[in-house]
Image 1 (spheres, chains in turn green, cyan):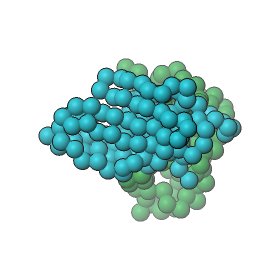
Image 2: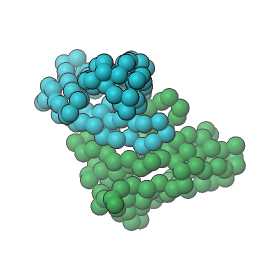
Image 3: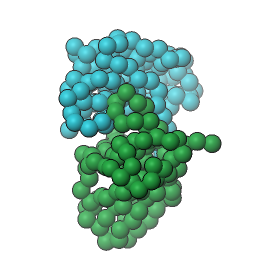
Image 4: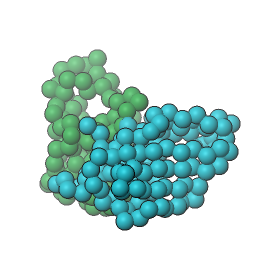
Length: 114
Length: 113
């Protein structure tokens, strides 16, 4: 059963703590993405990776970090420097990067920081 | 600022009616995509239209693209309660470096049975 998994579905953290969100895909896709979605809003790109060991900042990268050591995995760390981390985080992948390729999304992780 | 902006922000219709939503964008594009998101879930790809295409169909979906007006529309015909969701357009920037999509704010569609 191919797809993208994100864990956990809900995550609660205290302010000042770093937290890492998991994203795994078994679609053999080269490109992976992290988006943030606030209530009633669209998606904003945090980071994306076109290939293993490479990644680029998106529109709202401040306070976030990523790694891409394996093709299947693209974890996102929300650091204490992120001023407003409470949001719905979506991971996606595509065969290759670029607007010609559809993106496949995971189910999302809802992060609440208090 | 958002590359794509959907209009209307929210739409409420009766089952069986058609739903039309629009997307406007600012820069030249190669492709435009439409996605659906059920509440609290990930997005699902619906359809992709290239900049040299004017209209595309997929089942009950019809997408048009007018590059001169930098706009696209998504029509859902004979709507069903299961079509209740948010719909997003996503564009790539023809001139921008990097290969990424920019999503609009979405149209929330409620189909009443």
